[in-house]
Picture 1 (tube, rainbow, N blue to C red):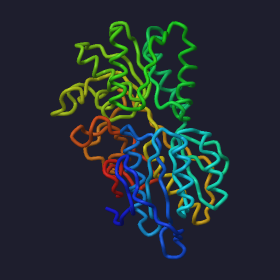
Picture 2 (picture 1 turned 90 degrees about the horizontal axis):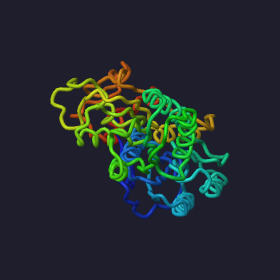
Picture 3 (picture 1 turned 90 degrees about the vertical axis):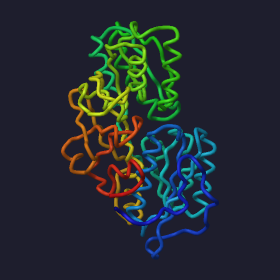
Length: 368
């Protein structure tokens, strides 16, 4: 396991203690002062992404002094924090932007002062910034086509949306709508907002089901839509689960495994052969952004846009990881034993470009 500490690291959504003053430079024998700027953090994906950034920093203790701030879903607060990071001597800022455009002036100001800025997962349009992202159009198109096909291109669909205003939600929704619009016999009967949160998604779906029932629903699409849809169906006594895409939680992938394939699994966090396609933004995008920022600071040339791996897992390709080792991941496992991780934990962590981080990084923030 890697050694080293992350200075002034804040767990969860808490804010940092007052920032120190003065620029640090690895060339001077001191680590670079690098900030992680997070926006909305009310879901499991963001917690896992933060863990992986923290693990990447711990893997480079001599070059990274990482500090984390959380702005919440408020663009103006994130702008103020970015400006303060620049004033505090940041050498690089890794940001999950709440908006693709609202932060541009603050990012431009940071770049003008020599700060390297990387956006991860949700992109920004400021040309001086770097983006490390998943192809959301491909993700939404592939998952929506799969759901449409499983529905026989007809029937009633629940369309779950995510955090509004982010490029991820905007791009996904537009691409998925384009797919479903090609099939006039598919009718979107509800558009609950799940905020990419299991708790919010469950509440939103429960409200939808107050005026309808599962017998009238033929498919579900959207992030954080599947585990809760299937769980609510099971709790209602339904045995024929609806096809669903596209979240990447371990709970979804476990539910897609053949019934009885994991000894001791129980409740709804258990294999039941559920019909699904699991795709999700890679939670290691922020960690990749940090690693690439170090390359830029070292004078290396880095592409302005880096695409993260996009892994599609269906009921027929879900494969159990017993321990989560790199060897297992390289061999193609993509679903973790329920005894290892909670249901809301995201399973799409494999990335050959970041050997420093793996299962323990995503789970508890520790590098390999």
